[in-house]
Length: 233
Ligand code: OAD
Image (cartoon, rainbow, N blue to C red; front, side, top):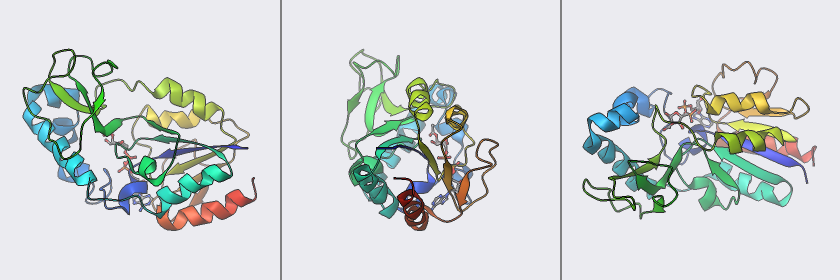
């Protein structure tokens, strides 16, 4: 089976009702990313950051995977599919995808503030239970969302690079490719692998210049992609 590697961003979950970050009305148009999603912001005001993520955790309970998530899960019948997602939602998993690497963390999980990547501290917490000040992780530090904050390293990047380097076909869906190191993964796609892009907007990326751009929303674009992929089985 050919290895299909798919890099996803907020755009794939937009039609499920989750906001993107940089579009009109995106989260970072309405909220201050440095205040709510950076390590410095967390150090300055933990309550505010917890409140923001508690709301996003709770909101995740109200949305469902869309047609694009479902078609990607079905592609496992014909391809070895690896998903690398910048999304912190669990919509790929809920649609049935078995091989999902989260680059920026997961809303379903919590960890400790001292060393967020300590496996002993990372655990699932029901989405309707808020994380509160005083709640401790296994190492005794304040519990926090298992989310990579701006200013922190992205521990899954080496694993992601290895996956990308083994792609037979590479697909990018719904990401502005503005955030590094995630956007830098395109440099590791083998020259022999055809590249596809599904995004209704213009994507300013040197590496993606030669990709076949399906310029629609994900729910419509995924069926167009499926037809292209049928030729590449
Ligand atoms: P952005 O908001 O930067 O980009 C979203 C992309 O989705 C844009 O290119 C849109 O054109 C596209 N888009 C919008 N609606 C779409 C739809 N229905 N179907 C397909 N595409 C659509 O989001 P990301 O690139 O995912 O990090 O942002 C990267 C990271 O920045 C996020 O993971 C998050 C954020 O800060 C953290 O929280 C650590």
